[in-house]
Length: 199
Ligand SMILES: Nc1nc2c(c(=O)[nH]1)N[C@H]1C(S)=C(S)[C@@H](COP(=O)(O)O)O[C@H]1N2
Ligand SMILES: [Mo]
Image (cartoon, rainbow, N blue to C red; front, side):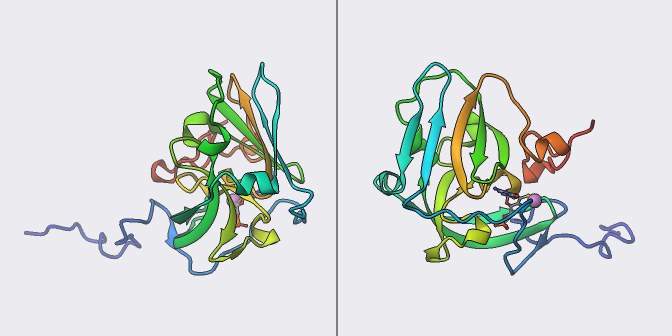
């Protein structure tokens, strides 16, 4: 008795359980940026956390380093269909930046040097799922990939991982960031194929 219908084996299907639907494995590390590469010296780098009703908190580079960086081993998934397995990073968990924050705001807008923005639910940034990453593959993160530091939220499509990130702003209601305002999904889970949203 036929277990597979005709044509099933002919379709390009993933046999890799780490590959979300509609993705292929990429061995390089493509650079995708809307606008010019930012070049920020760590001496000049500042990171600002804005929570409604509280004073802004600002970190310098050395203050970020004092928060206890950790190693991150993860796969990456880009909405343009490539996935890259087994990447290694070093970064500070966003949980460390949010310690002591009291707010019922459920959404966050990440902002970057150069003006890029992307929105995320707060719960996707907390619980050990998101980092301010500053090393890739044992080297300082290259400017093309968002160095000196980028947001790394690997369980969502890579457009949520803002390069040259320099701020997080808590929001009571979800607002669209750069790509989201052009039709990308407000959440962006690769396992649910949350690529674009209908108008
Ligand atoms: N600041 C900034 N961050 C950004 C972008 C951007 O244009 N500007 N592009 C996003 C998109 S669409 C993708 S797919 C990834 C690409 O990261 P990479 O260039 O390191 O592969 O960065 C994301 N972060
Ligand atoms: Mo992208």
